[in-house]
Length: 543
Image 1 (cartoon, rainbow, N blue to C red):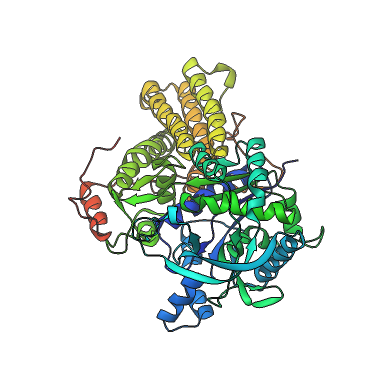
Image 2 (cartoon, helix red, strand yellow; image 1 turned 45 degrees about the vertical axis):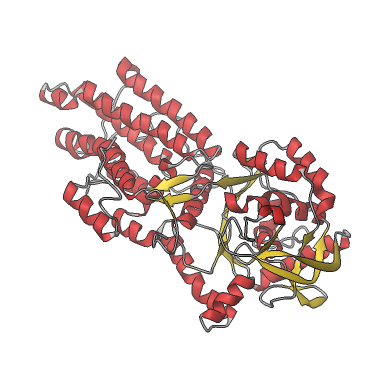
């Protein structure tokens, strides 16, 4: 029996609308969840919104709105963005929900009962953008936050504290026992180095603003926004709760094979230090892995409101389609590394790999040879009579299936796609070498059928291998080779392993090319509509 899988994005702060940085995290989590479903694993994919804190309170005031009205207004664009990107989340948590509030207070009480919360005075530098206090050594000259490049504020107030200092050694011991807890390794080393200096107790309540979850028994204090926000991963499932009271919590937190948090590197410390310490205190299971991805620049420049390059995904989806943008996100940058979003590279990936590679393979066989010479039907073949060149492509497909699975499970999406595209290339070379158009003219029907079946079955495998990244296009591909859409089912592993699943006699349905190639005029028009300066993004040859 396949055990459950739980995957989460960070919950996104609603002080502004979603951009491609948000989309990058969410698509990655969607790919993980779709892959798990293909393998027959019960899967829960969570995303959502962080709606409390001083920054939100101030932004709502600027807009002349009550905080709740402001966050309600900001929630809709996130929901619609994930829908247009094909991100099939199971849960959408908002920290203003009653369930979340109640579960945060339940967590507080568990930590309080453990003796890990006490009341004291606190004074330090506070960054509103980070919603966290900063030590002197963390700040740049002039008391500037290094993340937001903005001055911090000096805050002194009565505060509840969490005995974080008690968890320095327990965390180090846990890291040693779970060497894959934080990925990639370089980020884990940063976390360990920070922890090795020792931890200070953490201020976990505020009295300087009101927009948050009230501290149980002391409503003058609101819960520190990071304690509030991190709890979403458990509260969305109905926990913490007694066994049987929250079925989602029991299945996807208590019993999951894996619990994977996907986050940006800028919030790794909160997830890799504070969150596990809170859970240790409450005696709740820790997640299995925290994956910290890098930042995206845009055409070589850091995203900035002043530069006007905070890119919303919508216009890109309109220009290229959701699956193409998803493919580019997962193909262009090694997950965990910083990367650059380049409009020109997106066009080049589209033309060079999707149109010339996979699209061309489809068109050469399904829309041409099979349609014209085999009545549009999948031929019957004797697998024992296949030639060495056929078996080499079959062996390549088998190896690719294994390699792609290994890489996706390691969240090395670009390596999985490298491997899959080697199979696409091998299939195109196979067509070049076997020359089915000549076989058709020579009336060598048996050999023609062997070649066409081998390519069609390779396309069937590709429709599954690429499904987590490009679900809509893969189902379109399947429709053209006469198959129904993929319908993942719990406890049924659909990942390709056995050759010959495409039934002879199946009627193919060639249609509009999956990825029609853009000519130079179309490229120029698309980039102009997207506001890309041709001098910023010079044309380069497609690979």
